[in-house]
Amino acid sequence: MLVVRRYNNNTQGSDVNSDDNNNNNDDDEMFDVYLAKWQSIPGAVLPSDPLPTKQSFWDSPGITQARQQVEESKSDVTQKAQFLAASAPHSGDWLLTLPVVSCRLKLDDETVRVTAALRLGLNLGAPHTCRCGATADALGQDSLVCKQPASRIARHQHLNDLMTRALVSAGVPATKEPVGLIRRDGKRPDGMTQIPLRSRKLLVWDVTVVSTTAESYVDAAAHGRGEVAEMAATRKCQKYSELSTAQLLLPVAVETTGP
Ligand SMILES: [Zn+2]
Image (cartoon, rainbow, N blue to C red; front, side, top):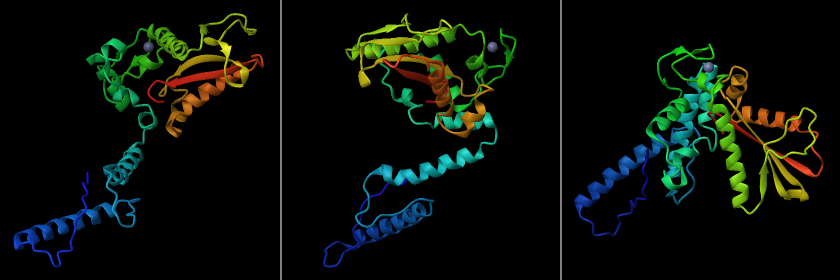
């Protein structure tokens, strides 16, 4: 990290003593060394005077370079997918959340350990045989793609509750799993507003969670940030293409380790 301060090398006519002059010269020399080092970073462009005073300006090129180096060092497709997911915008927002117990925003230590390890691609525990019969490795990725996890239904319901509560708190009445929408296969979306919103249409939503590192998605996830969520959203749009023109579909697609 480079901390920058403005310096004044104009001592003409000043009454500073020789010690101050020596200190200033040392500081200026050090500043020049650091400035040259900073300018050697690709993308580090110094604007004309005055020098920027925000630390983020000076940090940004180094962070971009470090991120690029880490990304280029990933050869395994799963590692690459994990890195892209972890560096996607908003995928780390939970790390900035204030742990307020009364708002149910506090995670217990074990949850933080598991979530951080999944995000960073670290080992979670010993390899074992999952109850679905698959081999679960130390990275714990099987838990996100397992075909028999009880938590998948709870996860889906929790997200659906969040959508409903958000709409209701915004003064928009909404109902979960509405009946009466035309679907030949009998399936229905997760929820619908009871009053028209955008374009005077009723907002219909459907939630889906997709595993970033699942075999069927990992290539797409290693290709770009948020691509798996985009694919899932497109599938939802196709699934509900028969909705009435009075309804507007909002697909809510969430990646397990990404945005
Ligand atoms: Zn399993």
